[in-house]
Length: 471
Ligand code: ARG
Image 1 (cartoon, helix red, strand yellow):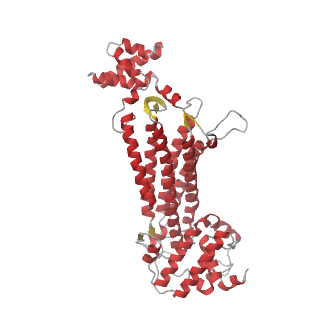
Image 2 (image 1 turned 120 degrees about the vertical axis):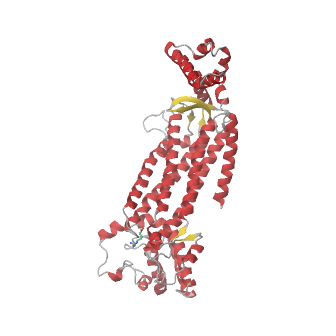
Image 3 (image 1 turned 180 degrees about the horizontal axis):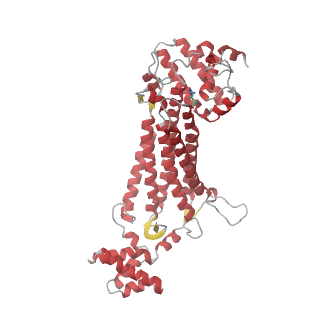
């Protein structure tokens, strides 16, 4: 113990020691400690403490000299934490306790004024909001990067088309750009959800105290202004109990991961010998320890696999919340591990999939060959009959019969089409390679005209998102 540590009087003792005859048991400390994972809130905790101390001075609870002493102690704590020289004590149950203990060691009786009018309950709620606000923007930026790569690959894909699938059965050809942009728009909604979630997280809870506010003349507005929160809490009980913003952040990241999982599943399929639509770059695939010929899509699989764990984190945290009476309960400490785990996993998945998609090679010939199967034009044949005045249901049945004959008798579909009195040789052009995708002309459709418009919209969309990210 350094000589400084003696001064504060709090060293080696929990913050609540006054009320207790005996110190905490080892079992209690081992069970309740959150320091190993809430250390990452250190920067947020220091920012919150600075704002709190500045507010205490503004309302007359500290004089200017005391304010400066505590601010200097906080700066030193920050330095120690950054340099890795901060000595944690066995009784530091969380990062808030550790920082306050050290400030008191450094600044003595003045340091002991840091926690005036504050509870760890409003303090931890503030730290978590600062964390979500910061990390949510990182997530949004990573989503934006993946969208940027999807758009670039879509632009490069020009007129490449592949089978579009329903039920994983070949349905109708679609432009590769159209397929890639489908994922672009889903991710755009995830980014929107972050904006929405962050707007609600952006409320300062500091000044709520343990649960009921304070008899001291605290001013939550001053803290909120310094930390750039546009709003303060309306109700102190709600302020310390509310973890909606954590649940929302978990949901947004989990839904993003579900989207990544679906992309991952397609990449797994596309990179198989059977599909052969995609070749993975060496730097974004793995080999087998036993099978020399293997090249495995582990990134895509992990993006898919992690979705399971993230769904568990979300469901688990909602279960944590569901039975809690007002206001703070220690159960709320269980917000941290799922949130950190989920955001870490999602942002790493985003980075890895972005790299995979930026470097993978699309095998255009495999895609177009698969899509050129004349059967893929069946709907176009039916629509041709509709244009001639045949009711659609009848046209569907007529073409369906031709398909059945082709399959059962092993006759090529074009031969049957050519000989069919309702269709005839003129219709053979519909079966020509690359023909049907060009006929998807309706708004938002899979053909070149609507996709050109869509590419334009996607570029606008990215510019708009960039504007928000820069703000
Ligand atoms: N480590 C705690 C948490 O994360 C801090 C709040 C503790 N408050 C209390 N009254 N025990 O929730």
